[in-house]
Amino acid sequence: MTSNFRISSGWLLSAVVALLALWILQGFLPALAWAVIIAIASWPLYVRFERRLPLTRTDAAILFTLLVAILFIAPLVYLLIKLGVEAQVLSKQLITAENSGLPPPDWLSRIPGISNWLIDQWNTVLGTPGGVADWLRHSEHGSLLGWARSLGRQVARRSVVLIFTLFALFFLYRDGDVLALQLTRLIHAGLGERGSLYLQHAVATIRATVNGLVLVGVGEGVLIGIAYAIAGLPSPAVWGALTGLLAIIPFAAPIVFGTAALLLAVQGAIVPAVAVAAWGTFVLFVADHFVRPILIGGAIKLPFLWVLLGILGGLETLGLLGLFLGPVSMALAIALWREWTQPVESES
Image (cartoon, rainbow, N blue to C red; front, side, top):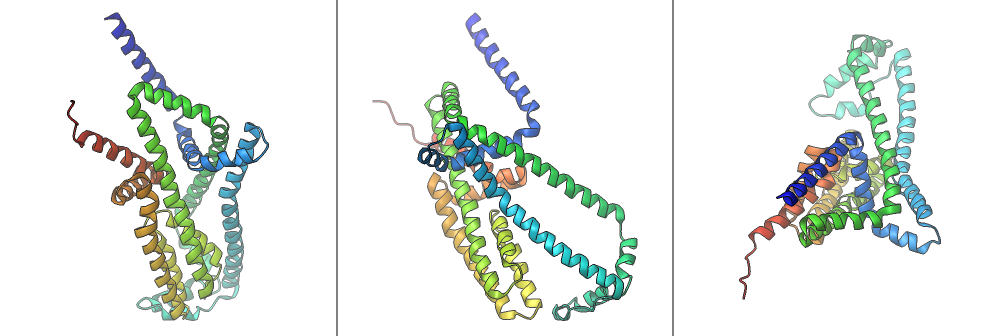
């Protein structure tokens, strides 16, 4: 009786300590979760990297973390630079419109259904000297300022998450072997051999999901970006980067290449617009129906329907983190289902 009481008290104390730690770290949990996902997905590369260089574990972890940081930050810096250039061009045009007015472009008249309304709005705001200032006076300054402040807070928050993610990632690379061994022992002590198998399944699911979402998304961005360049779309690299970024989310890439095709069409480039839309649809069809199911579902022996439901449900529930945690939860749920429903062999 006393022994059972001590065991129950020990489990209760452990649960309280764990919940208290999670409550204290709740603001850093997204960064820690991202660090764990990146570390698991890139661990095979890190092991090869460490073995080929005559570096200590700490130096190798620092250098590899810097490489990962460059991989994430460099595209963002490039996009910010391109957006800054476009913002300068836009500000000059707004100044010109404010001083002398800008005539509406020819492609506005080719937009079916709303061309007359768009031209009237253009002439009122941009085609009339002083129209921009008058529009700003009549607009909702509170809404504009609130949107700008919200955007600034989001950028600052994401930057802090990125910094702490990289900081945690360094420690995971440096001490990953020890942490993995300790976690395996802990799960094995609580769930036995079955827990160790679940842990291996979760790791395999994360790696397969990263390969199926990120690598395929990058491939889609490159292939469709080439089409943007051939079609003569301005800043095809930026459009390709946006396509690759949204291609990580299933069915989101058409938003970008559909918009690109529409811009080409209203500018009179009908054939390039149709070609971009057709090529983007073909690439998306092949990626979502053949490549991703093989990379994700095939690697973890899970029907791609459940992987897709896990991705979309995780995205709705947990945001971007859910893209990777959703399939893990579905994979573990299916593993439990198979274990509970498989026939029990009769003992001889």
